[in-house]
Amino acid sequence: METIYDILKEEHDQMANLFQQALRDGSKVTFLKIKLETDPHMMGEEKFFYPLLEGKEELHELVSHAYEEHNEAKALISELEYMDEINEKWTAKLSELKQSIDHHIEEEEGKVFEKARNALSQEKAEEIARLYIEFKRSYMNRIETE
Image (cartoon, rainbow, N blue to C red; front, side):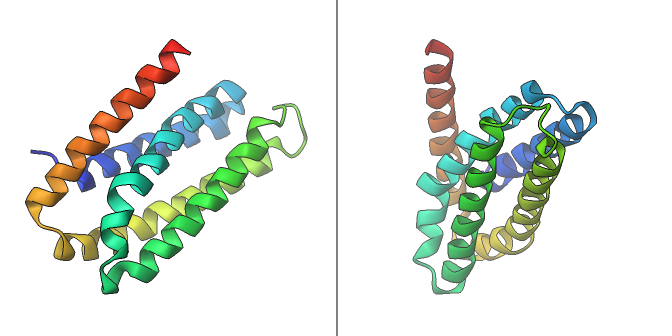
């Protein structure tokens, strides 16, 4: 059974590919694909993964920092959402978002996942994965019907 770490790592890789494409084509459409991936990803982490880790003393500070990084990414996404791709700041802002998310992913995979594996059982990591997948499926169904 897949764990939450497997799923998040796979999504991180997908985001990296989308960012490469976005910086190549400078397209708002590609940016919107990134937004469609990052929004439920961050919400799912904040709803199912981070709350379990916050209570662990060895993870509290890392999780607090992860929330801050999510907030930074959300602010940049919001700026880009209301910016036109022909705006002279578009590429710089998109690059800033990529750097912010790359940094977050590096810390999450390098520090948070490692400590979380020691703090959560395999069964718990699989349970979180199931809840996360159900949440994302429901989220995407809502988006499609709107």
